[in-house]
Length: 96
Image (cartoon, rainbow, N blue to C red; front, side, top):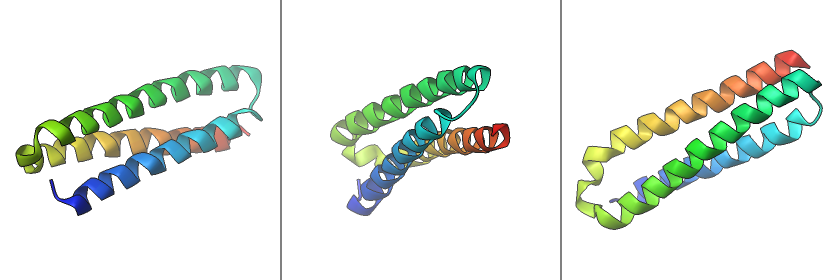
């Protein structure tokens, strides 16, 4: 796997983690029902991010030669998670 591609994936995962953390901070100011809903979604996002990180680390070690085949699948999964987080930010901003 090319080091620049590894770095890009790791950078995206770190960015997602920061957005989740920011969403947690913003949720503290939300009203009761909204906060509960957002907290559930945050937990789901955390689980998905953790699974992506585990999958990436596992894949990175085991399948160095197959990286090109899986890069698009991993990229798609990361983009979907990123969209979910961005939607959460929009929903949380609209609720304030």
